[in-house]
Image 1 (tube, rainbow, N blue to C red):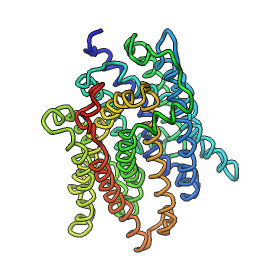
Image 2: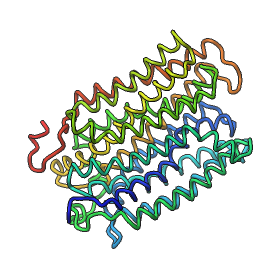
Image 3: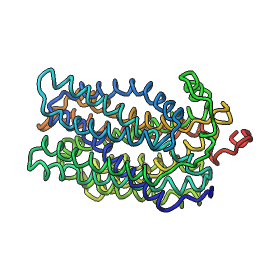
Length: 448
């Protein structure tokens, strides 16, 4: 088979990410707000549920990776699970934004159950989706070209959700936010299912990839060994986890920051709109940046832009509060770095798959890529937990003017904490990650 990946495959795979991330972005951007300000749940309770669900994912995500890698069918091992997971998650997604229909003890039980089920069903679809990349081409260059497509469309989904989400909710709900969120969920579920069937029709893994040649199946002990013995996977986990917690902390907290610390909720869509465009630009420019700069410098660049964003917001508070230009620049800075990081981490994971095969003698795309799904969900939950607990600690009260001490706390969680986490990500990467130029089989010395 030729190493080249067809345009039809790239486009279909990218559109799959569009539908997939439309079903993901509202959860990470608006679910905390929906739970607290629409459904009426306490922020601390919501944050605790977010974190508890990710403890469950720490087990279920790698297990799902094992299930996918053990799958043998005439449709391949990835596509059947993409369809099954999408259908299940679409139903749960609608249910998640039906929480406001409940009240009393039932509200608490339903919200927790719906969110946990959302995470479990999203795993079924997301892990096989990303795991396809190493099976579509063995060429590192082709992988770098391919990964731009899903990351571009995913960034587009996040851009539309962040910039226009509340506006669309208002329009579809005719002023009733609960009805608006529910109607948006229905629309997204339909697009999500359509995108999954497009992938199933047009995106086919290599029929005789290394993983398909393996006849021995994986057990849970094998999954543990694959993760534990791969030192580069652990280095990547540390780097990505701190980065994504910072990113999703900002994403989940921005609506509170602009509404209550800045005092102008209309600045939130401005921030998210510019940020979304910048993220698309970061993903789009990634192959060109990777071709010019040494790979080992790219993660530092990805971390540096969000730190610059935090510094801009800090300076704005001193010299020109609520300055639209500075807010736009801050949004652009963080998401340009996120765009680079999202594309880079997917290519890095593909390299880690190759490296892990040399270390363990077992090739497992889905187990390795299950870590990406787990990290994104855990980062979102950790961000949500920090937001939920943080709001309670600083004395946040929904819908009222906040006390000065509360405003300072809101500013720290939007500016100070993300900068610290981004710095930690860069330190871990510099100290432990070594696959800067990919991995060449049977030559482990190349990564040392």
